Image (cartoon, rainbow, N blue to C red):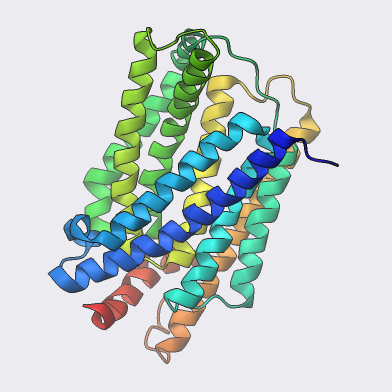
Length: 336
């Protein structure tokens, strides 16, 4: 199948986006380590010295460039082409972590990354078509429907509980806490980004949407969600292995974003059962790849410590709650 000129632009932009975003994880973590070594206080325990670290800002700029490239890619190419390429940021991040941060990625870890991407491709292939939107007010009417308001209320309550209760108690030992906060807020930010992007697109086409207060409300939601995401993503990167954080964050973020989109935009309305089942199977493949990658990293840690933690429970829940925290206590001594 040949590419049109617009599709080729979108394809190149999407590839560039994945490369920039994947690299940003590594650059920011290098900056976090450097800042922790200089100040003695890590971002994972509430330190903000990384804000004075140029390398961290380079990583932040790299991520912004990647996000902008991804946003622009949707203006040239269909989502079925752009969306699956976003999964390549996981591979970029894991490979760079292997060579730059010495976070070893072995064969099973590579298989886990491949499964994440394969599952994502299945989801995108069977993804529903978007409905045409003519105004930001139309999106606002979707946002205030009872089902989506229930979702938003649930997210706000869950995030509040995780920040106030779980983050102080087990945020530094359970990788799902910080990444969960990022993912829940991310699902809301994507819905708002889509609203803002649609408003800008319609404005450039001559239908000015900047006059409506709904547009600026969505801008405010984007800013709030992104700031929260960045704060807890920094904590996750500083506390846990990059090769674990990246795919887990990707799976949770993508799953919750699609769920939010299904509720708000009713994406599954009119889809046949086969397509919906295929999407669910894709999720299972992605989740399996993430678990495989995590257990591979956990096996490496237990081997490198010569059985010091052999008494840990072999269950996945115990590994999620205890493995990374103990590992980072050892790793901290190497960089601080």
